Length: 332
Image (spheres, rainbow, N blue to C red):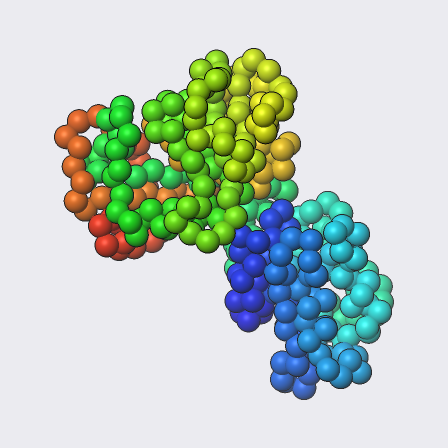
């Protein structure tokens, strides 16, 4: 199962809204096939693992290990549970059941009905953790929420004008995250003052969905990078719902974080990074509405004045040195 998790992780950033899954097939104590879900819309882990086996007759005497319950429904590809049942494998070992309603125990049921021995709950905590975005989306009916900010050595996140706090290594890490998460969100002031791209200019990978909260549509008609049509763009606002010039405007009743996250859930966003500004970040912190915090703290840059960084009293889950900055990660 540990090998399944290693394989599953290879799909990170490429399979959403599907989960990451790894599969290992063992015959007489030796791995004869393995695979993982490589990209959304492509073959699932179980199919890739089965196809990696030269002698398919060995499957009837083989154990199949998979990090997530095999699917039981038709999506972009045929379901995996009936395929494994048809192969009449000897045993299936499942890391964790799938929270998605169209699977949720149905895959395991198909296998048991076919007379295959099924074991579940192996390294379940670890299997759920790597797919915490997927589990949060389906179990809590909201995206997995990551709060992110960069603060100066003296505790400020900005001065009202665009200022670069983080060094190059931290900037590259941020752009890597943009290739991995579904969406990045900023508030009105950050949109207007910083004019962000929210793209992966410093990293090879897909651009995220970019989202701005602009209740009064102050950004309308402004020559901002947000409107360059380079990627899917959502504007949460209090005025209109329409698509205009490549931008999706979604009307919301208020800027309460719960309201915003429900809107993103209905838009299919599984993970979102709240990148600023201070007011938007504080609104999520006050409600304790987040799953993770990623905090860059500069070792060199001091601002002397400006907007204070959010105050938190959590113990970091991990601290990492990034040359000019320190990255502190907090996970609930």
